Length: 256
Image (tube, rainbow, N blue to C red; front, side, top):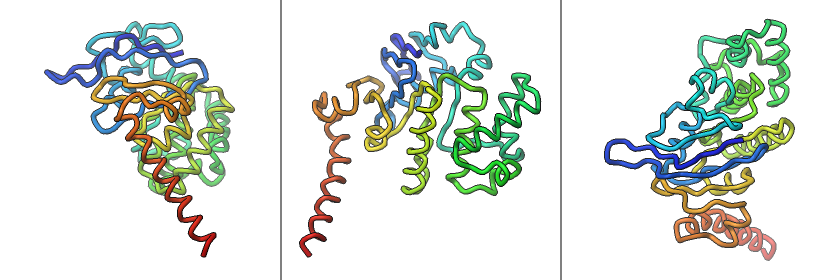
């Protein structure tokens, strides 16, 4: 569904992404994982041409994205990100209906789609459709953002740390909801995060980036069994330490 071939982005003398090649299968969720400056967000934005590559190519379902107008391309791709980006002067229903409206859907079609998506992201349409973004909690805003990204029935979603600013409980609930939604809809997704635990929970495969280069790609279990280098091993140490700490605390309680 998505194919990157020799994709690079240079800013002056700095190479932000270097000769990146990978494929994302239909229905797969690929996580781009790495620290700040690893090139993961730049890579994501080159897929839908929010950033133009210096060299290389991106193909979407067989089509070279360079041959598509940016507006046509972005209508084929749902995009969700940490800051949500809901239009503050529009209601929730108007925000979700933006792309369908641009595509010429009728008001009845838009209304039906909005209500369907609100239910899908576990928001009550009667309570939420007429609210403004500033009347929503952070978690509700993020759910509305995911609904908006799905509004035009995209086959591909790009997600840039969409849950990173949320408290742990809300984040976990939204991760669980997103897993369910993606499986129900069969959407192909590329998901950016710096959180190894989130990557392990959500990803069918994980591509680890460092300084613009891919250092390892594979299923979560593959990375856990055989990290390619010290950088990947250090990323994996965090969830391992957290799990060990929880086990230690539980063991202490059991013996108290």
